[in-house]
Figure 1 (tube, rainbow, N blue to C red):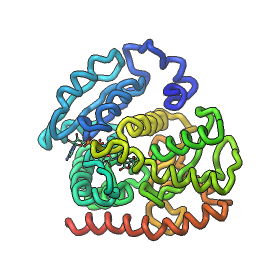
Figure 2 (spheres, helix red, strand yellow):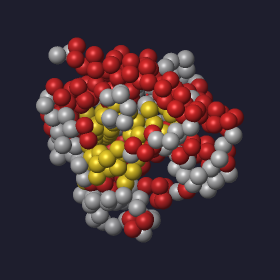
Figure 3 (cartoon, protein in one colour):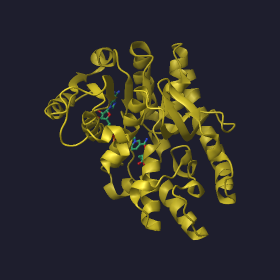
Figure 4 (spheres, rainbow, N blue to C red):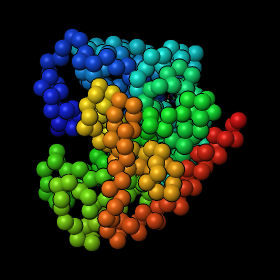
Length: 342
Ligand code: NAD
Ligand code: LMR
């Protein structure tokens, strides 16, 4: 399943327990927040990619051991560790993809927006360093609240004069991964075949799975639609409650983020058939940022997929209108935070 979901057909031929000593492509990837709950397994999964030549792991503490440990895996990429702000610039120089899972996670009873006060500043400072050191890189933002941290990142990049909206991504892959899993289980479908686009944002009702656009096509009763939609929207909270104070989703998140990294690297490598859902600058709705399927290419977002928002069911159309005020407020909160700093 890992092979099939991460790699193109041609690449899967080589992705067995046998690794070439040389990477198949020479991309540099940096993970900021690499010693954390997401960062560690994500770094391990990226270390498995044959497309990566250099893996840079950055955190404010505890990253040396993580890097030493992962570096012993006999896969092609070279692993280097970077600790603290003084080493951040060196971590970022020459990097093609920067993944940011730095920041605090939720505890039971909290919303993602409750993380804003701490994580907004962390994302601002890290993206500012990205702007200074690798302004052409793809930037993958995982830190919550994604609905606000992506607009913050955009403002910081604008202030630095290096904003390329095609290269800034809020990572919403976990919503798709969950939707695929829950739908396959509910409808007894083969997991690997199922693909459900999830649009909107990444918090509560802003997460909108478009079940009517499930592939292969499946029919759902009204009860199934309600039950699946609510489960997908609350899946993050399901994990937060199960972990009972020890954090939020880390392993499934690392899996999802690694898939998004691999898709980005395939696009950078010239694969012309790469689609993922992501929270990006968008003109699909009146909101400036919106998650939808995007076609990825060498320069980032090559195209949005407007047909995703056409022909929605009445349930989906209503849910789309209902999510807009909350998503708009979260976007504006992020922009206001970043503009206040200047
Ligand atoms: P964690 O606390 O386990 O790890 C966070 C790491 O970030 C720690 O190692 C910490 O040292 C590091 N960090 C803090 N400040 C930093 C800074 N200024 N520079 C670099 N690193 C810094 O948390 P986690 O479980 O890995 O979650 C991280 C974030 O990801 C949270 O905000 C969480 O809400 C979010 N998240 C997002 C999704 C999604 O779908 N987008 C899914 C799960 C979690
Ligand atoms: C998730 O969806 O699992 C993450 O956004 C973490 C959280 O706080 O729910």
